[in-house]
Length: 144
Image (tube, rainbow, N blue to C red; front, side):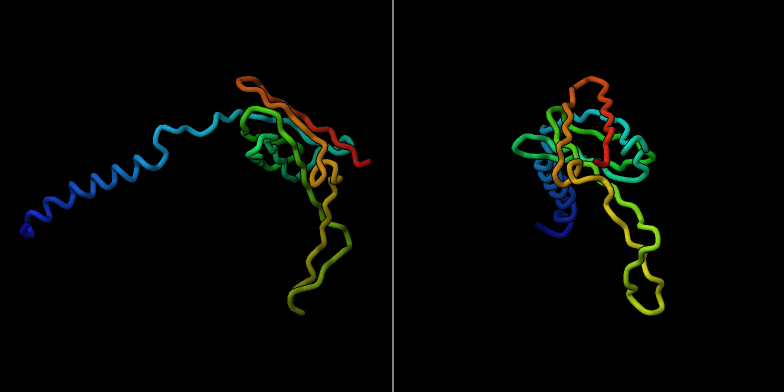
């Protein structure tokens, strides 16, 4: 093969290799069907201003789907099925400060997780997400 043949043959080979790579990435396999879930989150009647909500499937895979909570509202996409739900949020403790990294830096404010553990690390919250339905799931939490 001379140099002219090589340069004419090279684009053909690159196309074949590229086709094989793309055929191996994904193929006909589609991801799971996700469904919109939305709702509100409040603690003792007050909207959770800034936090995070996570839906974890109760299947063996335990897939998790997470979204921010902003001004007491959230929107997330999940697979349908029975879910365990965790809600977290923290806030600055007024007048409490940590140690500065250097003497020239102001001390950072300390924050605390204020959502009780029965709603996050030891959650008792659940939700059943239905396929092709309007999934509105509110969470009215209490501090006690």
